[in-house]
Image 1: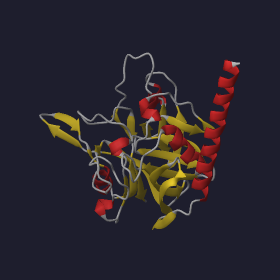
Image 2: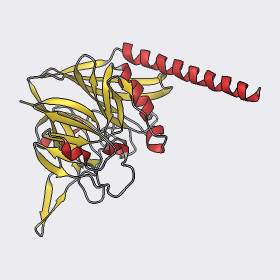
Image 3: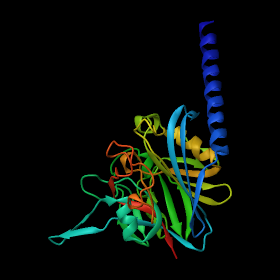
Image 4: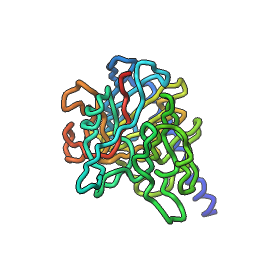
Length: 297
């Protein structure tokens, strides 16, 4: 009898959680987003949800939206410059806004995970056919989830890829631009399994890329680590992507790295609220290794 009651309680909790999640998704899908055209068929959408709206928490969300087939822009990846001393090169770390402005980007978000001490990406990165960084995880029985998924750009076509748990799989990708990152959140409309760990299950600022059912690219930032915006777990981020009608979605580096840049905007183009200075303003950018850019052709 005890096990039966326990089972009923568990089912009840799951049903309640699913019902709450569906309500959150409905609110997101019908939200009247503040929308600003940026030209070149790019839209900037933003909304500040309060605690009665989604996930019972304050959330500040920014979205860059553009058709996947957009002849006016070029999708790309950009990395911080190299610093050469004594015939050796070291990858620099620079704020997203700095890398974006150096590359004359219309808009950008931070992208892959990186080495905070030595600079450079910790995962495979190829830009315009040149391998910039290689995966640094070696001799482990199981690769981390940010090393078994990727975003590729080939002939200006963006694709989100599910890889395999095999070291070096990414080197077989022939696209001229490849960024290993993750975890993968959605693929062909199917929610991907996520490990139970603090990175996935605690709320943090998040950045992700999505491809919608109607063939648009979304670059999303969710601010966090403040009372004004709590941040999201990866299951919550997956629910957000699904509510925005995404069929494929992948997580980028987040936390203090989460940044959205739009050229010509105040605050050096930073439009979200990066958290590295622990103040809800636009000045808390963290230096990163690489970014995803929208460039004018």
